[in-house]
Structure formats: structure tokens, C-alpha cells
Length: 115
Image (cartoon, rainbow, N blue to C red; front, top):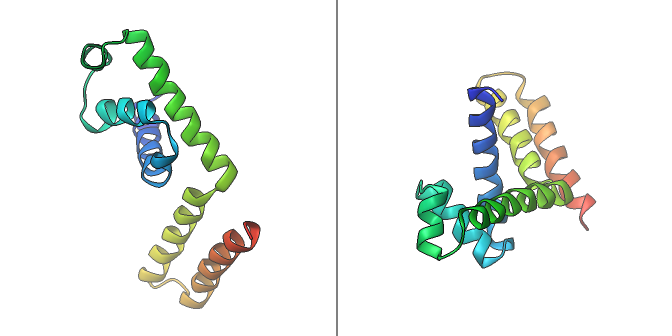
């Protein structure tokens, strides 16, 4: 994985965590936050929580997998991404009516698919 791909994945996971973090287990949330937000190493987290480094790695991977799974089921992050993209196009002066219609469609599509 290139540096750019790694950075994009971290950003994606950060957005997913913002949306779905409360749906993780307490342990998954704690490990994710310590690693990603507090920038602690696996060893530092393991020492703090009194578990093995492998246990920390497993919890971190479970948290990432769960965030991906929830996004696959709900798709809110993708909807928000599409809405942001269309809003940027409007701000850039590109055919406001067309992009506004796409925003409405993205919003309505998510709502109607989950009713």
C-alpha cells in the first residue's frame, strides 16, 4: 500500500469512526482511540490495558472491520461524501441546479432505502 493509500484509509476510518464509533464495543472504542487519536503504539496500549500486544492488534482490527461492516450495511459515509462533492461543485460555480438535484437525490435515496 502506498503512503497515499495509507493516508486515505486512515481518513476513511476516521470518518467511519465519527459516524459509527458508538456502535463498537467499549474495548474496541478504547483501543481505537488510544491508537488513532492518542497516537499510542500497540505496546503502549498493551501496557496500559494489561493485555498482550497481539490482543491490542486484534481489537484494533476488529474495530476497523466492524466500522467497514456497518458502513456496508448503512452507507451513510458514502452518502455524505457524495453530498460534499456536489456541494463543492456548487460552490465552484458548476451548474447549481444539476448539483442541487444530485444532493436531493442522495438524501432522498438514503432516506427511502432505510424506511
